Image (cartoon, one colour):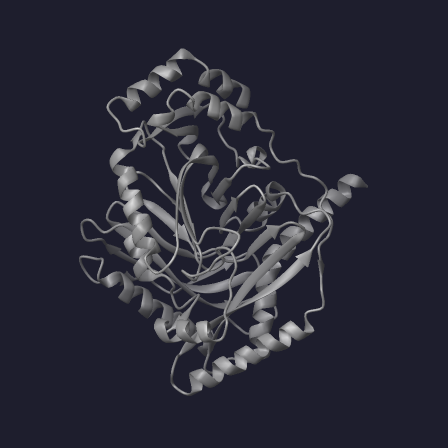
Length: 445
C-alpha cells in the first residue's frame, strides 16, 4: 500500500488536483486530497511512526479505525477560554478548508485548563496524513496548506518513507512500593467524605496514579493492538509527540454531534468481579447526579429539553458501569466546542455541584497528567464530531509508564472500596501490558 501511495503522490495528476483545490485560496488555507484504497479492513497500527507526532482513534466493535501522522496545522491553547480559542480557530479553518471528502481534525485536552505537562493543555490538529477504515472502505487523506503547494508531495513522501515503529520485546514493568501513597490517597478520601457530610458537595472525584518503570518501554502499536483485542466496545485512543505517548481505552463518550443531533453519555457507578453489585444505592446516586448535570448542560444548546434514554449497563472488559444516553436537537449555530465548554467536566470526572467539587479538588492539590479525564476525539469540516473522555490510560515517557484511575466519592462511600475500585480500573492497562510482555516472551521462547 505505501509504495503505491508514494508513486501516486509523485504523479502529475496529483499536482494538478492540488492546484485545482488551491485556486483562489489564501496561503494559510488547508487543502486535503483523498485517495481511496483497495484494502478492505485494517487497524493501521502497522503504520504508526516512531519519531513523528501521531493520533490514533478506533471503535473496534464498529469497524472504525483512524491514524493521523504528522501535522499540517495545529493550534494549542490553555486557560479558561481554551474552548473558545479552539472554536474560533476551527471556524477559521472550516471557512478556508478545501477538500474532496474525508478530511478530519483531531482534538485533545486536559481535565484542568491550567495543567502544564508533557502534552499541550488543549490541542487541535490537522494531520498531514490520515488513514481511515470503516464500513465505507479505506482511504488516505493528505493535507497541506496552499502556501506549501509545491513542497507538499515531497513532505508527504518523507512522512510515508519513515519506517514504522518496531515492536521491540517489552520488559515487564515493575511497580515501586505504594503503601505510603495509598495511605495518603485514603486520607484524601476521608477528607472528601467530611466535606460532603458538611453539605458543601454531593460528590467529589479523586484521581490516583501508579508509576511503573521498565527498561524497554512497550511499543505503542503493540499496546494499542492489545487494547483493540481486549476492549472492542471502548474508544481506543492515542496521541504521540515523538517522545511521549498518551494512550488508553475509554468506555465513556462525552459528546457526539451529527448535523443538529447531539448525544451525550451520563456514565457513573462501577462494578467488577468481586465487587458489590452495580445496582446499589451508591452507584445509583452517582449516576443520577451525572444525568442531572448533563441534561442541564445541554438544555441551553437544544431547541427542546434533551431527553434521557433508559438506564443501561455499559460493559468494558471486566468493568461494568451504569449509563444513560441523553439526546437532543441543537439550536442553529451551536458548535461542538460550545458543547464542550458547557459539559466538561461532568460529575463523572469532577464531582457535583461542579464548582464546589472543583474548588475542593484545587484546594487539595488534585493533579491529573496529560489528557486523563479531559477529552479526545475528532471533527469533520462540517462540524460533526465525537469526543470521548480519556479514561483507563497510560502516559509513556522515557522508561516510565504512568497509569491513572479515579473514583467518585459520595455519602456512604467506603474508602477501602474506593481504593479497590481504582485498582480494578488500573487492570485495563495492566492486562494489556501483561499481554504484550507474555506475547514477546512466547516469541523469544
